Length: 352
Figure 1 (cartoon, rainbow, N blue to C red):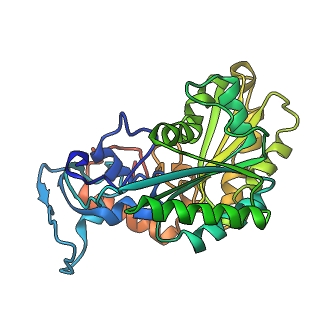
Figure 2 (spheres, rainbow, N blue to C red):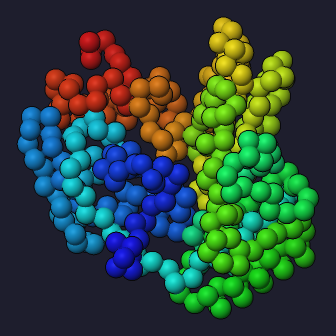
């Protein structure tokens, strides 16, 4: 689609290895949800193979079709537990003519929120991504000498925001971006910033955000959490985890994520030998991190799905009646439990 001037409305770190069928089955989120919305909103139709071999064809490419139940939505986010997606019809927006990227440094997370609010009011129609990462993430990238990553500013700041705009007129977009930066600095929302001047610099700035997951793997054991929480409390959990993990000096906490939709990626690392010494580190993280999220009516899995590791936490984000209905749908569509068994839904006596 790129060659024809269009783009897939999804961009995520695994774009080099993932496949669209898996993206749809997990309702993958990604970096540009703030602009293009959730993937399930872009899927127009699918073809799926059911447990009994039936090929279900809902490959409708119409934007509007209000005839009965929207059956395709059953499969989007079902993680392959209701059927195998074999074809997808997806709406592809036009590729923007102008892409601008800026990275700014902030003194506190409160200033991060102020900057986001300012960006949403002054750049609303051209914003395509708003990401953040803390100084610990930047320090990790630099200490691990990740290829193409360098400190974007002379001084280190507690928080960084990467903001991308996409539009049709480069002069218009650049002018709006510079006005935004001037206002952000005059209001003391940001301390410093760097604007990409060409495609190579755009790529270099994006590496600061996209290479964080890869760099984390060099720190031994990594405990990863993908959470949706209210924006105002998004980073509070990182501070809380650092306080809880003080007994383990070698444990480190890293926070980054998608500011446009309140999606926090909380990561805790520790040496493998420390992680293997009983459940000390993990016991301080879980179930606290999930209960903390549930108390704020957040989601224990913002974009990575449930799989087999989070089935025990599903009740923290879904009500008992909702889980019962999900079980009922599963039994009807896959009575022999042959499609991705033991995933998504917690086991029960009725299932065994």
